[in-house]
Length: 456
Image (tube, rainbow, N blue to C red; front, side, top):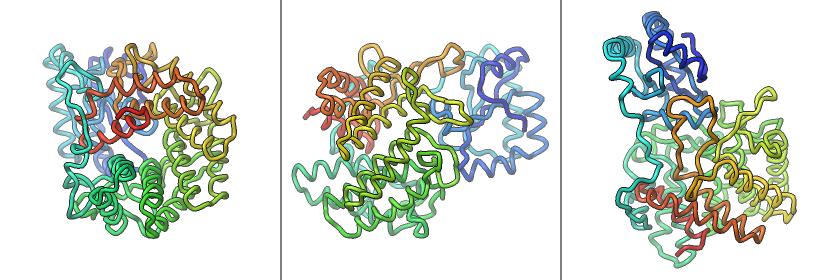
């Protein structure tokens, strides 16, 4: 397969040659992606059809989460078909060689017969943008409604290690010790650790399990997944005082530390050598929490050194935080990187009391305000570019990132004693209020933000 990068030139070529676009969204850590490369994209028939009738574009989900957020069709690999304008025609996930060859013929034939109709297909759905539809207010009852009493976690299968509802349960427990909330947290943490989700050799956790009882995991170990779980385990150990949670925190911290990159930061997965800003920031915040729990000064100092080394490479005054840096080239412009980096900087300030961390957090916050602020409050997910094509032209106000932005600016307001940041936090919180109820257990992110913004 001859893959082109996501670039306006590729779309211009598709328009010039009057061909649809085959968009493959892949991940270096994804076994199904590697399998599709090994089989489907090595098949001579598929290669010939793609070369003759398509412009083929490959996108790495970790490098371009903004593209993934707009075009992902249910997981990785995503196999999407677009018009030369970037409008989504259709697609799916994994396709074997025989089915792929048939789909390639069908889509290309339909596009040739009806190119104008194909171009008028509606764009991909945008679940993150508020609409004028009736607003359902999220509450804790909704968050915990799908808790699985038998096996822990939320929903039936597949089972993902959702952490925001566990953090909410612990926050509510500290307000009023309800045994049910403790059961939700401990049963879930025990089931994940004792089932198939935890790799006992490394101490790390896999991305998700395919069965209700946490067995048959997809064996990708991502930094962000493990960092979020590390922060949750440290919180559980602090809240409930169980030795088993302390031990799990220690082992998982060691796994996260093992992903440290010599130039600074932490690699995005156990198999991906790239360092990404948001996941490195998550890891830093979690490691500082684990270090505080254990009274481990060396762990805290190690985490701060790794984070500082990455920030020195990734941050530029007036240019914000790069998503990643490769061969001296910075790739950036994403809200999530700035919000997560800001939260990590404030965590470093809380641990050390060193004023430069607070000052740096304020710089990052001011940059985010200038670069991502949306009219009416809240934040867009990325900085627009004149060369944007397809759904990248859509301005999106993401639910999760705005919940995190509300947390960051609320904390920044308290750390800097600048009340204006409190208003920013409230505006981001309010902007995604219509969305929270759609997210089931992950409505907990909005409810946790409410506690930071001090809305009861």
